[in-house]
Image 1: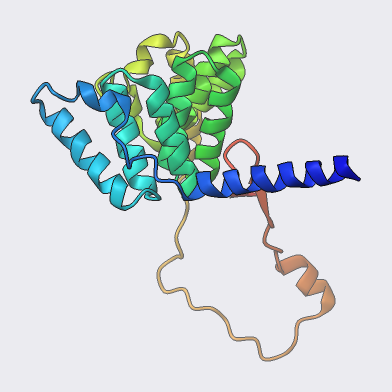
Image 2: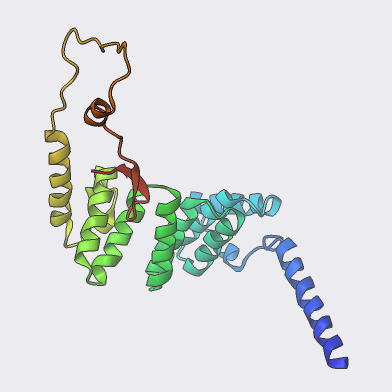
Length: 240
């Protein structure tokens, strides 16, 4: 009986601590890295302003995400990761923080965690080119060239600027870009080479005066294809 009471008391204490942590504002006191914001740069000034804003609004996903990006610029990756996680805890659908978290995890060697974050980004923001490219890069590094080429081709299709090293510096890390471009070109060629015929001049749709026979209906009426799901992009495409 005494043991049960102690267990219940410990559970209540832990529950109270958890509630306190949820309500605690971690920015009431200046974080340790604040002592390094003394260079007089615009980046340091922006970080101080963002910390002040988070003291007033500690549940802002956008502010956490912005602070995380600035912490990466100041070379505080662990603190940056914490900020991206706080952004996601504030809004689990905030895809920029998922993508940024994937970048930090990848830089720290956490491949499985990075892959989950990039996949979550693509699921929230269909066709997100940078996340698609990063997934391709991870597949290439793991030796899965076919999957990598597919991801690269989709990234280039959604945003051709991903081929520009100024937009996507990670392009230099891939040795499969030329194959991805061939796959993209093959798809584009089939799409752009198809010349669809418009209605001929003077066409008027006939008005039926009598119900068609079942045989005529079977011969003349085409049932539209139901949409099917493309598991790689989570988008819908017409069945061929």
